[in-house]
Length: 92
Image (cartoon, rainbow, N blue to C red; front, side, top):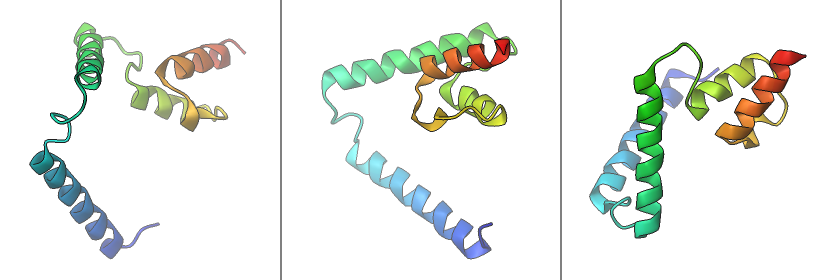
């Protein structure tokens, strides 16, 4: 359990990091191929969200479901791997 001071410090650090990224325009300074990949990934998530449905769609949502089902190795899995693992655990 974290203390109030730790939570306050964590919030402050997140705000500082966000401000620094905005100042440095870290995404704008990335290689074009990386920016393109990030844009495509964001667009894919937006498409999945627009379609709706009750099934988890983002990696974070899949990770939470894997955590609930106690799937081993979930922290190292990507979105596709989490989908496969959740599919396997659903059958057994």
